[in-house]
Image (tube, rainbow, N blue to C red; front, side):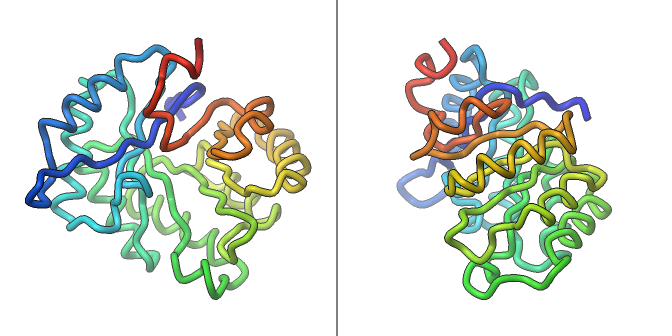
Length: 225
């Protein structure tokens, strides 16, 4: 993989006009500003902060395309991949590639938050998305308090799959963090480990390659100075 996210990766909001349409001019201003800050290594769009699940397919493609235009190719645009079913998500990833995304942050199926998942289902989800789209993928570890969190075995198997080059970890259980991150690091030294812990940021910054956080888009000069 050639994508280097070792640094700060903000997840910007999607700007809207008062009529609810995507504000392209604001995307250009926001994306250009973020890309111009030293230490920013990429932008994640259409995630939680970007409200990707609320947008039409056409709006999703527009957001990716215009953020890519805004950064002038200086940093990669990473698309949140949030579709429920595996093929739905895979086709979403394929559209993201066509719109100009360099990588995808793969969300668990949101049904898993309440009901959990069958053994092997997350691995299959990543496999189908990558095989269909060819999009380099980031493993997204959800909080321990949800049923969509992945145990260590699942994380290791996903991290070892073709196409997976990084993990965004938001487990929000520091006992699990302190025991699982070293195992991931030892098993896959080239895996880029990114924290997304807003409330445990200091604790988790010592073990990682960078941070992928929504509020990384604020007070940027304070992050890596």
